[in-house]
Length: 332
Image 1: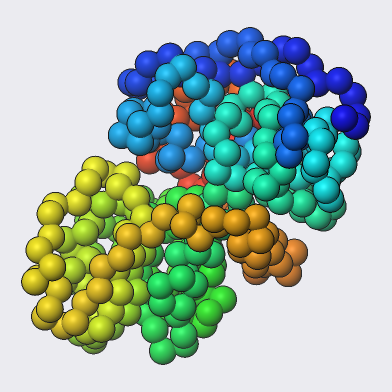
Image 2 (image 1 turned 90 degrees about the vertical axis):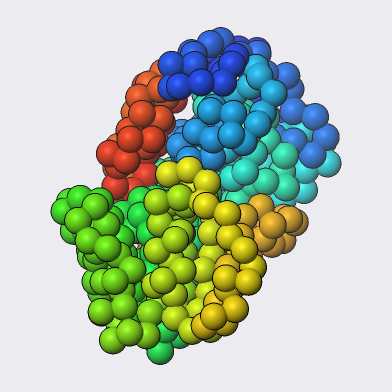
């Protein structure tokens, strides 16, 4: 084993039972030395995602007790056996490995993404889940072209802002939906051509008006119940609706026969299915990191809170008070 001996204790957060944000409890955690194929990553920044909320609520069941969090960026401190290509001192990010709400974590090397020197730890912790999710959603189902209109729901959220930028980079026309004027400004700054406040307007009617009745060729929806029925009205003939989340609750049931009219397609998108191997993860991460380094893609940071304020981070995200990404800082 290379590097320094793994710490025996670290500060972290544990969920003992499902429930509201208050079930996120600061604890002292004991970490073993990394085993074969594993490394110890000392976290500099930790990403907060809706996946963490689903797991905390129990809608995405995880047996308690557990440490939540699915992404972080930091420095490799200790390397176990059989870990080619990674060494103590390397800057890395990782995604979709639970246990990041802590000062450090034991992580499989197959989850690691090398972090270039010109990409900050803030950006590193912000792109792993949301940037790769956006890349997956925008490329896997219907890669937009200049002739397409793309509708992005929650366009000022962490994934939403990334989706807007990816869609604009594909030269598509982008329409975003938001809930406040401040979020509308953020979506426009990210590149949205038009923005609809769905608390004031029927977004489906507005999309049809803006597109002269054509509708949106691609709709990407992480909201769910509050938006899906409108998606069915707003989507174009031969259009695609991709559902990747249910922030407002599960959508109403849909009969397949309802899709026959206008030849519409509805797909479910889970980024886990697009990063099944380390090579797939690295390829998608490279697209995101290239965009960051080229300057056309940014991860907007809404706030950075101390690790012990994880419950407040969940409240902000759950109550839709955020524009962009919420991070936890375990170094303060």
